[in-house]
Image (tube, rainbow, N blue to C red; front, side, top):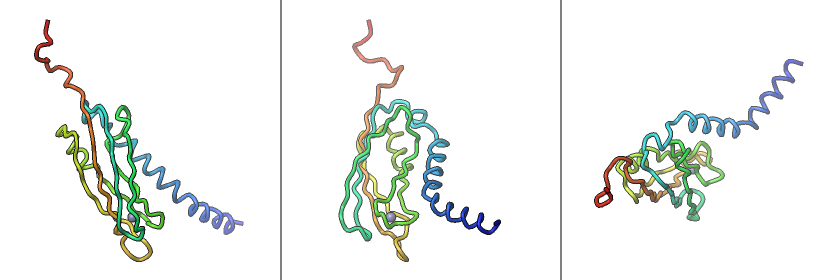
Amino acid sequence: MVTLKKTVMMSRNLRTEAAQRFAERRRREDEAPRLLDLVPSLATLRLEMRSRGGSVNAEARHARIVVVDRAPALFALKCDDPTCRGGGYDVTAPIMSGLLAATTSFDMEDTCRGTVGEAACGRSVRVHVTATYRDPPFSPRPGRRP
Ligand SMILES: [Zn+2]
């Protein structure tokens, strides 16, 4: 009776591995500081990803519009190779340093740290970031004063 229950729980654990990774990702996002707290002048943010290499030979592109009002200051991208295990990219540091410098357009590259079978995944992503910023709230605009 006890053994059977244990087996059922173990297989459920395997099935929920993906759900746990998702929950872990959500927890990290919830704990991360808000993007707007760190970069209050940020108005819009768009990421264009181009990934290539690894066992998936094709180049893939997709874009993400970040909802800056409630986005966390955390930029973890998934590896797009479905056979990759434990992979992904964390481009939080380069994106944040670009945004903190109020750069409107910049690029970075990262290599997946996951594994496909016995080998390293080897897929890499190139991220093109475009950002716009609001005017600083208290800076006087020339020629606008009454
Ligand atoms: Zn990968």
